[in-house]
Image 1 (tube, rainbow, N blue to C red):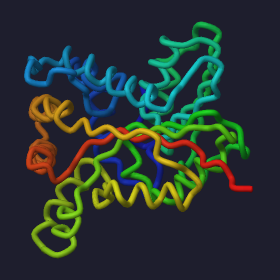
Image 2: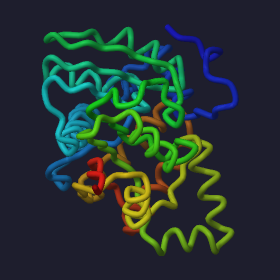
Image 3: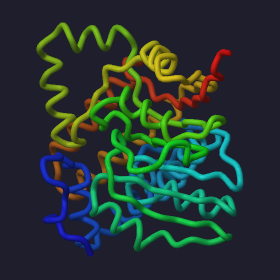
Length: 290
């Protein structure tokens, strides 16, 4: 198994520190909940969610499928999954499609080591995992058909730089699919105006690492236009993701991490109040005007 000493220097990854430690210890609950996907779940009927770890694992699989479906992914595509985690989205694509060229990109070698161990190509697919920065992608221009970022863009140093890089590596008919926690304008104003939100930010960052939760849907539309994209699909799935929070709190409570329990509860409350919206967004490259 991987060692905590291999984490990238100067990049706080407390969430993955917790998960990798528990996976190394053989914690079965963490393995079942986060051994494949490390993101929230999607329930078609959230009021019927049973609160089980099994149900969460299925819901997490459903969420990544909705993101790559929104991006219009098809057979024979060259796909880049930026911030690929343990390779869960790559594994899902590998199982659902054939003749894909799949690349997982991550800045943390520990996550990539696990992805390489867990995900093996099938159905004439090709898979490679690459260590690198999503804001400085080590790939040639126009080398991808689809770029995905499943619940990770808020960790990147700059959404704008990521969009610029995605635009660079995508082919002329390329697509970008993401999911993100998108704030409503009043939440951003509250964060900027009131000092008490600093404790909220510190609590969340202390568990999940650097999180920029001040980006609105309007910001995304502006960013898309500036970087040569057009927004082609937008779906608010906040309600469908809410059953995630009790399960994540249960997992953190089981491993004895009270700060992570509190941080997750804080994000849950903000989401229940409608101040933070979980959105699936897809973008297409704008046609150049002649």
